[in-house]
Amino acid sequence: MRHLLITVLCILSFSIPTIEAQNLLSENTVIPKPFEVVNRDGFFSLNSSAQIKFEDVRLRPLAHYLQDLLSPATGFDLSLRDINYVKDNPVIALAYSDEMTEEGYQIDIRKTETRIVASTNKGIFYGIQTLRHLLHESIELNDIQDQEYNIACGVIKDQPDYSYRGAMLDVARHFFKKEDVMRYVDLLALYKINTLHLHLTDDQGWRIEIKSWPNLTAHGGSTAVGGGDGGFYTQEDYRDIIQYAEKRFITIIPEIDMPGHTNSALSSYAVLNCDHKTTELYTKMRVGFSTLCTTSDSTYIFIDDVIRELAEMTPGPYIHIGGDESDATPIDEYITFIDKAQTIVNNHGKKVLGWDEIAHSKLYPNTIVQFWRKEKNALMGIEKGAKVLMSPANNAYLDMKYDANTKIGLRWAGYTDIDEAYNWSLEDFADGIDKEDIIGIEAPLWAETIVTIEDLEFLAFPRIIGIAEIGWTPTRLRQWDDYKLRLAVQGKRLTNLGVNFYHSPLVDW
Ligand code: ACM
Image (cartoon, rainbow, N blue to C red):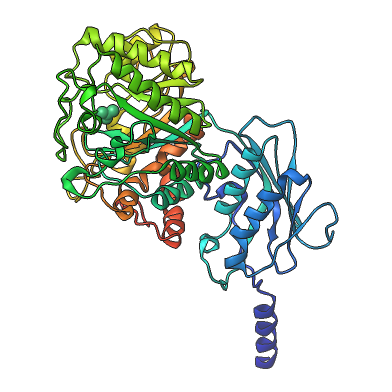
């Protein structure tokens, strides 16, 4: 009897599957939360004979990208195949379908095939990011893991609610070298963010080489908040950033902030000042004291040169002209200035983005008003026919402290813990700013108090992940209680990626 019991136990222990039980696909850990998920029985398992199939030669670069993502932790070759693949072995297939929206994709997970389809490479890229989130978070590690990589069977159909999902990085108050920007781009892409706005100029520093006005960077780029060394991007650096971001389907939007926030330019060229005297370099944090001489022709020659060089290097559709906090510019001059700046940008083939104050001026067709502070400005912009980009400081500013204990960051718009950064929606934010008025969301990270990539990551993560979900997932599908569980798993992924993120006590990491 005892012998029989031991035999039965042995059989039982041998029959316990070595593969971990799978959750349903609908109980996934994906952020942003996908639009629609259907469950099926069983699971797809990556093993050493798994292959990556591309059904169109234009998908080969994405097949390579997927191979590079999955090979290190699995240790599998994941050989790339065209239609000549081994039918009995597991396959991840990439294919086009013209049934999806521009950024949409579908993943169909069966026992031997996981199939990602989209109508564009961007959609396929987003499908790959979702696949990443469906795999155990150790997939992000660079050495071989003792881990089964399985995905529950089912179908995900996904597409974004808003077409503009962005982050902004201030590289003017403190300079971030191109490798830091690229790392941020990589992390943003993981959450399907499609735009990075670079705040390239401010009172404390001019960070983009303009060949026709070299002193902007030679002198105006030489310092930063607190008096450090500053720095700038050569045009080659800037192009490298753009190319790097393009490969991750992120559009770079450059900002030249004007007519205020211009002390770095005013200290570099006397001709930009109404009194023809250069100002001192500035390394403190006050705002609202500087202005270009808006009544001088030289100023518009300068802006035309800057925008021409920038437009030539920038494939994206927008140039941001700033326009915020120009308290030293008389309002009538400000209105004329913003009008002329729009003309210059349009003449160089680009559309204008500007902070909400620009709504005081005439607005050109396709000019976008970026709401950061005053609803009344955004409403004025809408009345003038503009669409709005939503960046309300209380919820979307990544440089606000999480709470009273946060060592870096500012607090003028209040503390913003991760629930506050997540628990709002674009279309319900303000009366009169309706869904059809809004192009999307952007989370700015101002750099007065951040110096290193670790500082940057600490303020951006995890709040930027919630911002990504607000832009992608319809409001009715989002709930904080569900989000924070998915975020806890993302925390492990961020740890594996070496991200210095804030472990808010609101989440059970
Ligand atoms: C801003 O925060 N000054 C746009």
